[in-house]
Structures are given as C-alpha cells and as structure tokens.
Length: 88
Image (cartoon, rainbow, N blue to C red; front, side, top):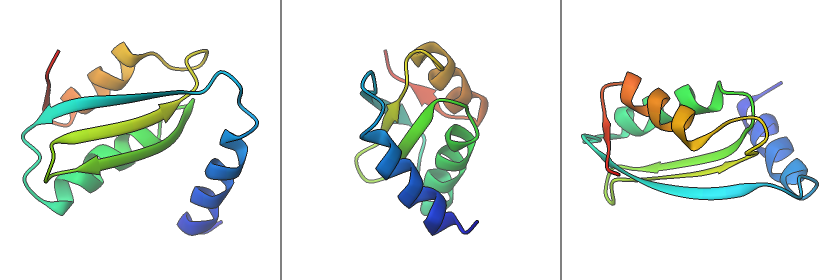
C-alpha cells in the first residue's frame, strides 16, 4: 500500500474513532524538512497514531491519536528519542 493510500485511510478512519484526540506539542531542535520527516515517521510507527504534522517553521508537532492506544507521554518519549526536546 502506498504512503498516500495509508494517509487517506488514516483520515477516513479518524471519523470512526469517536475518542480521537488532537495534541500540539512545542518541539525544540527541528531545523529542516528531514527533522520533520524523522519525527513524523517515528510517530507514525506507533499504534494509535492517526495523523502527524510536524513543522520546523513553527516548532509544532500536531498529533491526532487514540488515547486508548497511545499516551502523550509515549508520544513525547518517541519525539525525544529522535534527539529533540518537547517543551512542557
């Protein structure tokens, strides 16, 4: 399945997850598009992540997720494991 197909599937299924949450995290250290990609791909590997948008320009990582499957603590830990710092 192509990456585009996976993204479309995630967006469509988001409508069926009634307990989906959105969290915006301020992340220090993202300086380029590769940083955005590193964070995005690491989070997309987590079960319960619906969609991720990382912006080096704003320093914000926006995550749609299912809180029954993944916690903000885990999301934060994965971002920090990539070498970035999440502001609390």
